[in-house]
Length: 403
Ligand SMILES: C=C(O[C@@H]1C=C(C(=O)O)C=C[C@H]1O)C(=O)O
Image 1 (cartoon, rainbow, N blue to C red):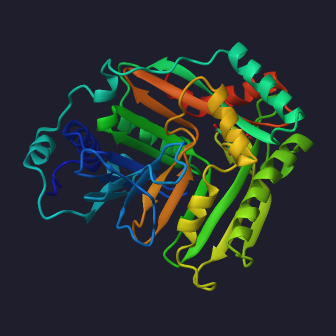
Image 2: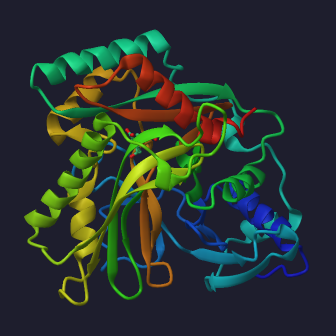
Image 3: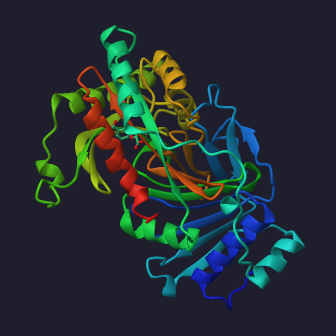
């Protein structure tokens, strides 16, 4: 199966193209603060939709839409093939390890690998409907409706989002953009997921862990909320230690922390460590972040990540508080289906670890169009114009790679 005579950056590209052309669901990712790039493909063209139970599953990649009430609709890309590319910071020196290689591989796939396919990718084909760009008037009206509902006591916080469409540039090349995102956002979870049977590719640089469990059984989640530019009025980067936060962001972040604590209480886990809140940089933005850490071996709770994934999604960082009325508001007022935006994604049981992130700072490639998504937490203290500006800044994370 190995094609070692190819330069590895070329090989990663070749693998990606061959998997797409074969119609295999495929993911590529790079974990925060790491250099290794992972490539995983599944030979099942219509991936299974299941509930993620980390203790039961073999290696694979989870990909969930925002709307997934019982968790049963998560796509699971079983790792039929998994490669790790190291020293990928400079693609010239990139080397790779084959972690999972099956006994038999579709001969057409091997032929495609050898032929180095370069046909037009399916996501640029003009088929399937694409949601429109949200106008500032529409968004501001939705935010004001939300503020009225909050003042009327219907809920405390709702996360409203919007879309922005771009034509995919003719020279747009996924593996190259993925590599650029890895360089630009070392602290993010950088990913690209392709599900050919759905006709879409999603790419992102997420700052937010939903659940993770490492080989030692250490569980982590985080409350991430509150947003401001990482640059001052003169364009200088603000030191995180010198960031000032307003009451609105502190309260918005506290709502997410309280929600996580309420989930931990529900399952009677008292032995958790909290780190923060601290200011973290995510691209051109800063957020408030609090980490929650549990040693699942010490408390003898191996299924902690499974239970918490079920309880947490969707957190109040992407939905609202209380969850149900906020979710209803989103469904009734946003004029499009979020699909995988603000869902979750990430590797499951890859080298005994699972790392699931919230699908934020993300875009969908479909039908020749790149749709970018961004949302923001609306509370009683929100100002609709400022929230619009916040979404503009969030859209920049990926948007700057499209022009
Ligand atoms: C909803 C998004 O981001 C979330 C919302 C934030 C906020 O409202 O301040 C901050 C970080 C994320 O938890 C997004 O990026 O689309």
